[in-house]
Image (tube, rainbow, N blue to C red; front, side, top):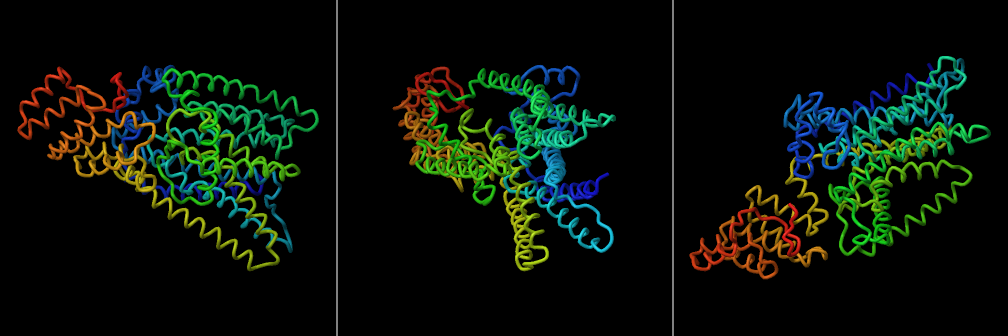
Amino acid sequence: MKSGNSLSIKIAVFAGIISLLVYLKALSCGFIILDDPLYVQDNPAIRSLSLGSVFSMFTSTYVNWWMPLTWLSLAIDYHFWGLNPYGYHLTNIVLHALNTALMVLVADEIFKISEIIPEKIDGTERCEAENNNLHYGFSLLIAGLLWGIHPLRVESVVWVTERKDVLNGLFALGSMLCYLRYAQSNKSDISKQWLFQYFLAFGLFCLSLMAKSVTVVIPVVFLALDWFILERFHGSNFRSVLIEKVPFFLVSAVMTVATIFFIGEASFLITNENFPFSQRFVVSGNAIFEYCRLLLYPVGIVPLHLIPDPIPFTYKIKTVIVIFLTVICIYTGRKNGARILVLLCFVLPLLPVLAFFQNGDQSFAARFTYLPSVAPCIAFAYLSLVLYRRTLKSRILLRFALSVFIAVLIIVYIGLTQKLIPVWNNSETFWNRVVEVEPSAIALKERGCLFVQMKKYDLAVQDFSQAIKNPVAVWLPYIYNLYAFRGEAERLAGNNENAVKDFTVAIGMLPHPVYYRLRGIALKEIGRAVEAEDDFKRAGDEVGPLAWYWSKTLEYQK
């Protein structure tokens, strides 16, 4: 065994344990109404672990997603925990701890390629060798912790729905680790260990796609590693390197086509007519800018960032900055491809979730940085190790300042992560955080609906009123919904006079039978029986609940 191997394993275990301890606070969190009911609480696909149900997970889609391993893992949790969120959070935390350990091992392989792994030295240089081992171990720990305990990881770890993230990460990081070992192995080895690593990398890659399809870009990441640091494209290797990727690209292509088909069937993808390329481009540029900012300065992290309407001019400015910095990175990285490699390994995993393939109304999300953050964290740890070694025999003050900076950075990240975990305690804390940072009409409307469910009607009225004052531009033709929602909150709070006024405004824009029925109830409560009876007649047999109605087609969104 090489000298660095036993050290890296110890550091990996240590980093995993620290990550586990940091996130134990999440065990007290519950489910939230955003997707958790769909994925767990109301999901019939996870109610059984019979052969038939498992077979169905692998041969069919649920909510138009093919994620059999994600459904299987949630089904295992349901088998042991029922609907107790404790067990689901525990599984997420353990998976992330394992991923943090894998992150250390991946960093170790990268450092080996860069030839900065320490070797044992005898005699008079033994003390220096021990120092090198110590510094090397700390650099691996930095890589693992900066990634594992970074506040951007909270959403992926603490949100039960994001089981797909941590499970996908386990297989994706495992695939990357095996591929790096395969690429550095001696192909003339008669034990064929290199062949085992290749098939293991391919198998783990396939498993990652069964957890979440976002890793379809991994084959391109492997090619980038081959080109920039593994240097496998030189001479006669060019053809063989491409051929060995064929199975990866075939599986990736099949998964990409299948995913686009499934989400197309569900009408998840937003059409170019409703969201033109020019807007997609600036929203994507803004997202990359924000991902970089939050990676360096993780303040203001919100569980839900919605695309504003209209799109602000600042998005264009940030996009220009991203383009400028990308050009600079490519230009200055011509002689040393490390910068370009980090850029590619950061951007490529983001591509499937950028606005170019928009399938929702989110501008960007912290969870999307789970794999893209791997390369920047390893690069930072590598640079810190190089800088530390260069100042080892001089500039003691600089070395001390670097050590303090890294220590403080890790402590601050742990503190911010601990502060963000309670945001996911329940649906109320979730929406409170969203409204606190981004008080959009959409967030206010969602929290208002939640307050109605919680029978906090006065608070619901406040949120609906604020949403009416500052509605999303695209909502203006449908603002009757907000008046109706506020009217219902007023009615349930006993403020029937105000309820009648709001329902009257809503009816003036859309004479929906539900509106008449609810206004009739309010009119009856305040003694206006004749008017109430007239409303009940207009409502007819309508007994459905109040919902969000789109135009006069009376189609609605729950």
